[in-house]
Image 1 (cartoon, rainbow over the protein chains, first blue to last red):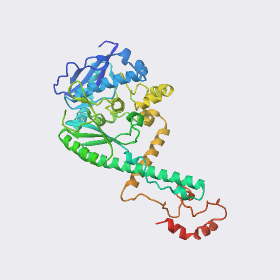
Image 2: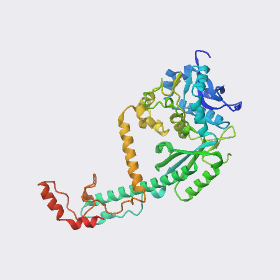
Image 3: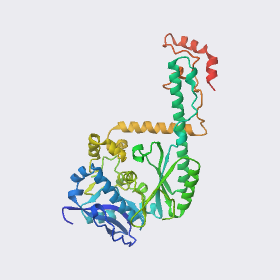
Amino acid sequence: MAADAGTYLYAVARDAGTTLPADLTGMAGSAVRAITGSGLAAYVSTVPLDEFGEEPLRRSMEDLDWLDRTARAHHHVVEAVARLAPTVPVRLVTVYSGDDQVRALLDERHDDFEQALARVAGRREWGVKVYAGAGEGSSGDAPDEGARAASPGTAYLKRRQASLRSREEALRRAGARAEHVHDVLRSIAAASRRHRAQDPQLSGRAEGMVLNGAYLVDDDRGEEFARALEELRAQGGEIELTGPWAPYSFAVLDDPAGDVRGDGGAA
Amino acid sequence: MRQGPAGRVSTGSAGGREPTNLGDILERVLDRGVIIAGDIRVNLLDIELLTIKLRLIIASVDTAKEMGIDWWEHDPWLSGGDRHLRAENRRLRERVAELEEGRPAHPSIEGTVEYEDEEPPRRPRTEYEEEEPPRRPRTGSTAERDRRRAARPEERRRHGR
C-alpha cells in the first residue's frame, strides 16, 4: 500500500465465499474488495489520503455535496454486501493505514464481530415513522369560553388555555398512538430501537414525527410484520415504512472498547 | 421484490431496493453503524465534528438541518457541554410525564384542573376560576392565610374531585 493511500472500511460480514457484483464501486468510483481472515470478510476500498486523510476530511465533511456523495457510496456498498451475507455496517469514514491493520482488526475483534453478526443473521432492519395525524393537529371543538368572560384579559387567558389544552391533548393522542404502533411492531421484531424524531425540515413533513423506530425482523416474519403494519395503518394515522436496511441500528459490538462515548474519544 | 413489507423505496441497480431519502441515509451512516476504536488512520471521531458544526453555524445551519445534520446538538459527548444534557433531561422528563398521563391507569385530566390544596406549578388559579378574585399578595401571618383558605371550602370542593 502506498504511503499516500488508505484502506476505507465499509462493513464486516461472515466470510461466506461470496462474490461481489463485478460492477460494484465504492468511494469515488473505487473498486470494492474483501479482506478475509478468521472466518470474517472486511469490505474495503483503497482511497487516496489527499481526499480521505484527516485534514482533507475536516474540510470535506463540511461540504454537503461531498457528504451526500460519500454517504450514498458508503450505503450502496453496505447494502450490496448485506444482500449476500450477514453484515455489520461500519460508521461512515473509517480509514485504516493499510490492509494489515484491517486483518489485525478481524483477528483481534473476531469474537465481538461474530456475536454482532449472530444477532443480525437472517434479519433485516425496517424503519417505521409515525406522524401526528390530521385529526391530532388541533381539536376542532375547543369551546369558545372567552365569549362569556368578564374581561378581555380573562377571555384571552381562557382562549389561550383552551388552545394549549387541545394541543397537549393532541400530542398526547399522537404519543399514545406511537406507543401502540411501537409495542405491536416490537412484539414481532427480534429487536427494536427508538431513535430521536427527525426534524420536520428533514422529514419534509409539517406534522411532528412521534415515532422514529427501527425494527430488526427475522426474514421469515417479514410478511407478519407487513400485515401488522397494514392493520395499524387501518386504525388511522400516517405510518411510513423504509427498508429493508442493513442492520445499522443494531450493529453494536459488546466490547466496551467499541463504545467510545463517554471515555473521551478514540485515538 | 423481497418478501416483506413494501416501503417507500426505489429499485436499486443490483436488483435490490434502496431507500433514496438522503436524510434517512445520513441518519444511519453518520449516527449508527459500528464505531471501531483502535488502530485506525482516520475515523469520524478523529475529525472534530465540532468543526462541521462551527462551519454550519456560520454558513448554513438551515441546509444542515434540512438534511438532519443536527445530531451533535443532542450528543453530550460531541457537544461537550451539559446544556444539551439538561435539555435532553427535560425532554425525557416531559416524555415520561406524557407517558404516565397517557396510561389508562392515570386518566387524563379533562375540564377543570384538579389539585388538592397545593397550587399547580406555574399556573395561577385565576386562569381557570372566574369565581375567584385575583390573588392578593401574600401578606399577614400564616395563621391568617389559613383562616382565609378555610373560609372557602365549598369552592375547593367544586373544583376538586
